[in-house]
Image (cartoon, rainbow, N blue to C red; front, side, top):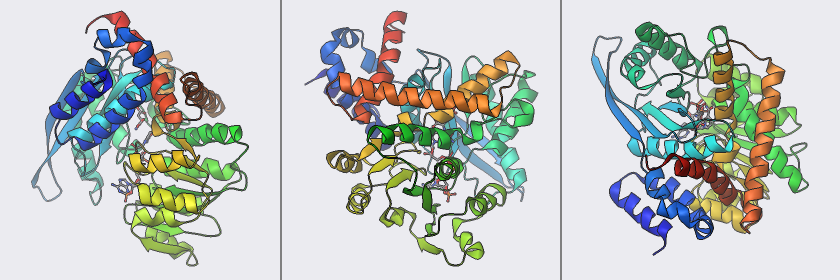
Length: 444
Ligand code: NDP
Ligand code: 2IT
């Protein structure tokens, strides 16, 4: 049995029921097979056995009082996965589906993603099974304060720097930051995605979506394609989806469908993003209400059917495993030529195989959605400098970072004889820097 297969088996055995974690580990480890043939010192130093085991996992009780005065209890997580190349960095997810396996898959992916940015950040992730939907402002604030009352002792501007993810945006980051500052008496860049009046960075809000489009622009260019004139379908209508749509539109694409967890809207004239932003960012309503403003658009329940809408470019920007084999086949038969992941692990392994065997441009999330965390690191940089860059300055840095990620991933794929395979390329390019740092730092 190969080194990779042995570690994979051990990992699955040791972490039963963590299915998303198994899926993420399997993809990364299997694509690293050719690396171990060339670099036997990694196996000798137990790099894989160590890299699949988080350095620290914190699970805690989050008690809070709802508006009726009832005691509510949620579970909080922070997984500090790997600090070989920098302090732990990664978002917080608040969603009822959150469990340890999901946080570990996200934290594991984050190690390689953060390495790909070229910036000095390690991998971590956290969150809670708290459901922000239907909660009052007061309840959201009380929950965030209780969550931080435990989390603060584990994090710090040079230790572990959380940010947003599903269900955690500028509002939640504000409440979390306020409580951290109150408890510690420290005004430091301990969280990213902050508001612009208290240490946030311009472009952080747009960064994941814009970064995805910058990455895809490069990938498309290599195959003689472009966003100009293309029909695009984007799942989700949250932070990543909205700014991916905005940049795609700026580049001359027509975005015809977007979704939320209830269903999707199809607007053949092209989605009016001002309506989506008002509904989602300001009023926190459902995507279905789009039809109140544009009655000629269509609404369909079952958000996963969004992939039946014919398009040239598909951008899954909602959640993990939202695009399966059947959806992939439908996309291919409808003429889709590129798929770029804004979400983390949105395509199932079977769907990825369909794309690859049909020569579709396929960009894995850990490469194509790295613009968010990269800009988070630029926010940390500005916080440390006590200084702020302009929108244009941050945007230009983000674009350069995304182009470099594309180049490094495609170069690594080429070097290992699998040209065009961005999955293998991203995994290898991200892994090498972390593995060499672990090697240099000894058995820790
Ligand atoms: P938001 O909370 O802003 O938006 C999430 C969107 O996805 C909403 O439209 C939501 O619908 C939908 N969604 C969430 N969970 C599900 C589900 N289980 N089934 C169907 N739809 C779902 O989150 P983000 O936009 O920040 O995150 C989207 C994805 O991008 C996630 O995979 C995240 O990990 C990834 N990501 C985010 C980054 C960031 O900077 N924010 C950076 C890199 C990756 P509804 O409102 O109905 O729940
Ligand atoms: O998945 C991700 O990369 C994020 N949610 C962003 C993490 C961050 O620290 O900005």
